[in-house]
Length: 110
Image (tube, rainbow, N blue to C red; front, side, top):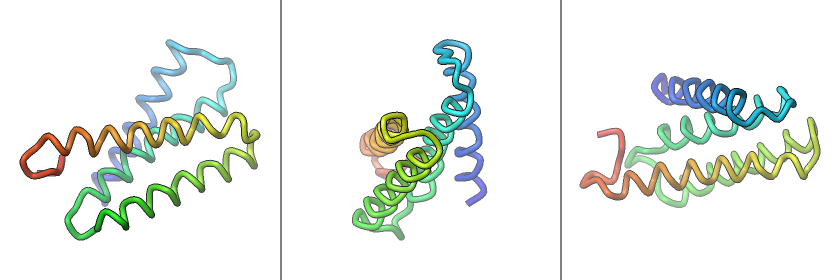
C-alpha cells in the first residue's frame, strides 16, 4: 500500500510538472485534477497488480475510479473538462498492464 501511495504521489507530481511547464493551459486547478487522475491510475494499477485480485475485480475498481473522476470533475468543472481525466486514467491503466504482459511474471511488481 505504501508503494502504491508513492506511485500515486510521484505520478501526480510528475504529471503536473510536465503539464505546467510544457502545456501550460493557464487553469491550475484543472491541471492539478488531471495530474491527480494520472497519479491515481499509476497508484491503483500498482495496488491491483497482485494475484489476489481477479481480472473482474481489477476492471471493477478501474471503472469505479473512472466514474469517481467523472463525478468529481463534473462537480468541480463540467463534463467536457472531466472527460480528459478519464482518458488519461485509462491510458495509464492500460499501459501499465500492457507493459506487465510482456514480462514472464505478468506483473511489474516482481
